[in-house]
Amino acid sequence: MSFSDLLAQWVSGTSLWDAGAGVVVDLALIAVAYAFIPPRERHRLRLAGGLLLLHVAVLIPAPFLGDPSQRWTRLVALFLLLASLSRAGFLLVVDGVVERRLGRDVPQIFRDLVQVTLFIFAGLVTLGEGGVDLSSLLATSALITAVIGLSLQETLGNTIAGLAMQAQPPFAVGDWIEMEGGRIGQVTSVGWRSITIWTNDEVEVSVPNGMLAKGAVINYSRPSTVIRRTVKVAAPYSEPPHHVEAVLLDAIAGVPGVLTTPGPSVVTGLFGESGIEYQLRFYITDFRIRDPIDSLVRDRLWYAFRRESIKIPYPSQDLYIHPVHDPRVQEDAEERVSERITALSHVDFLADLPGDALRDLALGARRKPYGVGETILEQGATGDEFFVIRRGEVAVLVGGNEVARLPTGAFFGEMSLMTGAPRSATIRAVTPCELVVVNKPSMQEVLETYPLVVERITAVLAARAVSLNEASIRAGGTADPASTQPALVRRIRDFFKLA
Image 1 (tube, rainbow, N blue to C red):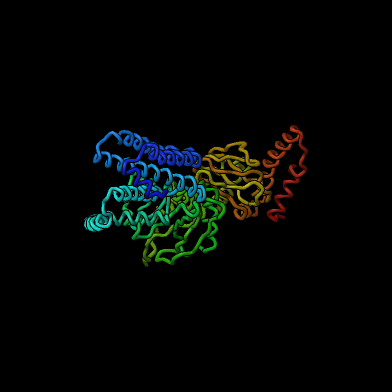
Image 2 (cartoon, rainbow, N blue to C red):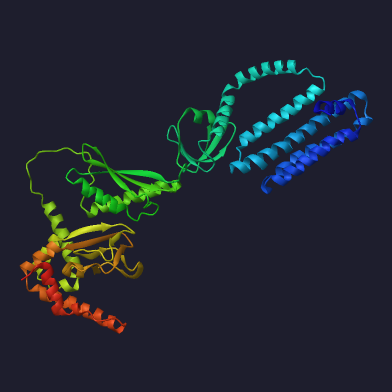
């Protein structure tokens, strides 16, 4: 028996036994769908089951009604049965087959569109079996559709745009996107008419699909969450580009959130009116905190430029004037030298230097600022600088483990300065620090001008080295023959090439 004959029997009033065949088929389809659909999607079958129950409830009293009522009752029952069959079949195909093969969920907008189409088809079949001329109905509906389409042109445009985006989705819920106009946000929902994004300002914005379809959309979450960021900074023309690039790369090392692979890079940009623009490019994965990461990178750049005495230029003009002595400039210079002398005078092995020698050493010293978390020295690295903490606190790390903290007034790096020995520990800033730095050329000049101070310096250094050597022996270590004062004097004289 064909499907149309079965429909005719249901409509003309055959027995409940014949009509029950459709119920059996529907129950079997629902059971198969229940077996194939993932457990989290089985609740969708409630609609199919509810429609089937309504079908039975409507069909049972049909034989006891009059002919006109019986006919319309059976048409309603037919529609409910077809709707239940279409719902169960749709879920079986989409949730049980298509999504399993694709490995991802079918967009809700497509699910709704296909399901509504199937319900409309069931309604048309029911009307056709009821004797309605479908050709005239379709002609009338086409006219109505044209009128509605003209009045709802923009709404329909947004809906069609939504369908197009679902067919080839440029983004998904959870992605960070940027639309034309510079608006950036995270997609929270995708609907028929519009999408909703959540911005960093904690504001929910609804964007029509038509607007998205007309403009470019930048997706920061696909195909990868790795995003390149660029921070621009200017440097004077007097600074060699390779030096500035090295300073920028050193400054960004260890910034939280910045990837080491792929690593950062520097591009020389514009030659501006007041300086050269450099573009520091680096990569992140958490787009949500892009602004805090950019801010921390700029903070590190400021500290790095101050340490290297690189001034960030600003628009300026050259004025040619007669030089005039300004006593305030001399006072500022004297004050800075006095501050360095005060810092150096608290160092034990420099305390016995003559006043002139200490002043010469202070004139050659430099002040270097460091930000929180920046590495000042690396264990095992070579170096010939000595540091005095004028302000702040640093941590001492050996083998990656923190062993001590040095407060304001403490110093480190003296053995590398005096003998060229590798750094024995890593030093990292715990708070913003300002350090007074003495390098080898400045110490060389003092030692050559005041040769007698070598003995005084080495006496203090040797005493400290002997104390550390004895502590090492007590801990089970071996004696270091280079820690005695005569050996230390020879190393210092050899390092500075003194007679």
